[in-house]
Image 1 (tube, rainbow, N blue to C red):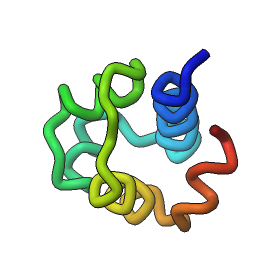
Image 2 (image 1 turned 60 degrees about the vertical axis):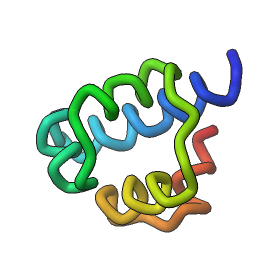
Image 3 (image 1 turned 120 degrees about the vertical axis):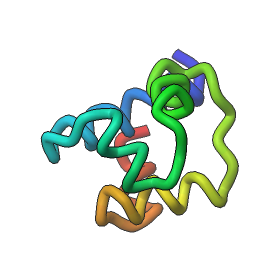
Image 4 (image 1 turned 30 degrees about the vertical axis):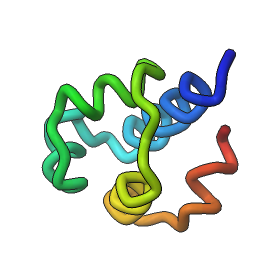
Length: 69
């Protein structure tokens, strides 16, 4: 499994553990829902700025976000 897929899987697991829908999560991140879907499917190479938005929306540090990767 490549890094994009592993990152996407980690994001999905964390989002689901907080019982947040993709749409709610996208709103929290300030990103489009289809972009979040593509991240979770490993189809997007995510920028550092968006990684930070994802971590903030999940209320975790960036390093915690990468623990599951």
